[in-house]
Amino acid sequence: MAAKRGANGRRLELGLQLRQLRESTLVPDTGKPMTRKQAVVGVKLSEAALARVETGQLNFRNVGDLRKLLTKYNVSDEDLITSLVELNRDAANQTWVTRYRAQMPSGMPAFVGIEGEAREIRVYHPTSVHGLLQTEPYARALFETGKPVEETTTEFIRQGVEVRMLRKQILERDPDPVWLWAILTEAALRYVVGDADVMCEQYEEIAKLALLPHIKIQVLPLAGRGGYRASHDFAILDLGDGLPPTVQIDTAWGAIATSDKPREFDRFKRRFETMIASALPAEDTPEFMHRLVREMKSH
Image 1 (cartoon, one colour):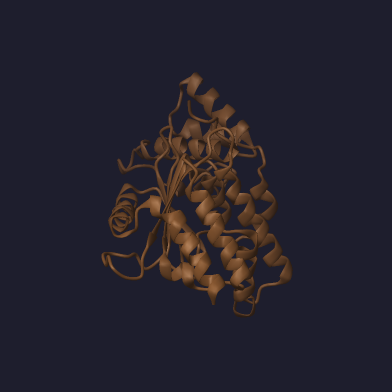
Image 2 (image 1 turned 90 degrees about the vertical axis):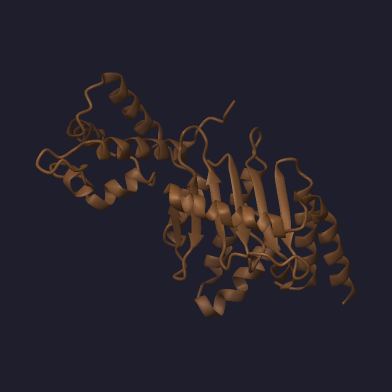
């Protein structure tokens, strides 16, 4: 039985249904699907706000705006109208993400909300340990490394570490923890963040997580296997229950970009599956981490 959707999941479901209804509404003069710009005419809602509703970032504060849109979309089925109104009401609940929204990069609050609703997540990171696997000392040291470059504050770092640790809770969710499949690179694992103690604790954390039945971690070795390697990190989220899978990437401007377009999903799925073949078997990961601990302590 699937876990009950949270507020973020209900916003996603509401947005998806509204987008489908809008795109299936043909404008009489052109015979083309109604655009967002056309949809908000006569509604106290901006085009940008409607875009955020359709992508699951917002719900309607004024249910009257929702009803007006449904009228424009020629929805007359009272059961459907009632279900969407109830979905909008249930989507109003706040989550922990709301507290940190102002401190997050562009696009990240929406992604973190989606991440918390995922049934399965596949991630790849070529330059550091992925955030969902990081220990608190590793995350703090990583933020500290970028402090002079990014001109961040101590408070920003504190909140950034808190967000990262809160995100990890989906791995411990009871019941229904998220199923995670991560591919890391040996180069990233050998890059020292903080000091030897920080790295040894991080290696032990990965070894421990790799033994859990709902987590699979593979390492791309520095030598011996070759094969394709993506040059940038990404995450593929399976949201289940009829919602389209979503792909997330970090941009060069520090923002988070997401897409649920089938073409994008297929492209990143191919990348992930190709790298699986080049990575070490998941069952080798705990011993690989223990070897890194031994090497770190011997230096």
